[in-house]
Image 1 (cartoon, helix red, strand yellow):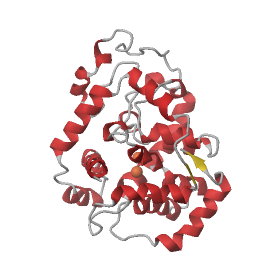
Image 2 (cartoon, protein in one colour):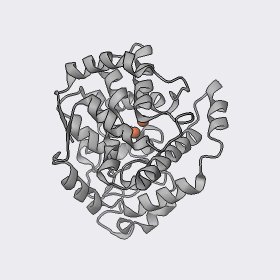
Image 3 (cartoon, protein in one colour):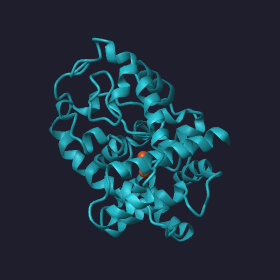
Image 4 (cartoon, protein in one colour):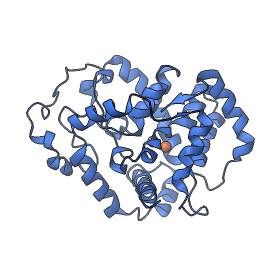
Length: 284
Ligand SMILES: [Fe+2]
Ligand SMILES: [Fe+2]
């Protein structure tokens, strides 16, 4: 369990660091700082140092080839959620919400605001790509902010100084503003750093409405949805769809309430939404 425990710790640090970087405005701002005053800066920094060094264009292509065959496991949505939950065996239940609870809280917050059922379902499943951790992937290749590879890394990405250690940084094929891409080519033509977002997008792409797919694929792309650093690669359609990514982000980041949702009571509702949109078994 040691590796898994480390994965989870990194992930908690990552999310705490995100809340420190992007505190919720108004009342909850103080709360966010109080709870996450000391999110383990060194851990986060070391995490990004490794991530920025190793997420090369070649690495991303190799992971796409390895994982987009979906021959690892077949699971219903609920089985996948329970499988993901095995990640948290070592955590303290009094402090941490497990994965199911984070997913249900996100879904429930979206539902409480009256958004469409597919968005509620998206809130519930948006992090399922983290099962990559259970397939033996290291945390720097599963969680953390995502960004395009194959073109210059923006200095708006967190800890940009560590991209100097990335072999692509000095490669003239990949280190210009557009790199291997054309101006405003659309994000569908852009390879993103490898992680749970990209992986789950490919699992879901035939089943959910397009705004849901954008939410899944780009929810960790803070350099764009918060910092607007990659508009030069986006087309009109991307901008239209990013309204949904931005709408979703606060639900992901700020809906961690200490009140645990009643998993058994909510399960039928989420299973009904899954039955409406998804096949019985999902292929991972
Ligand atoms: Fe996520
Ligand atoms: Fe999340």
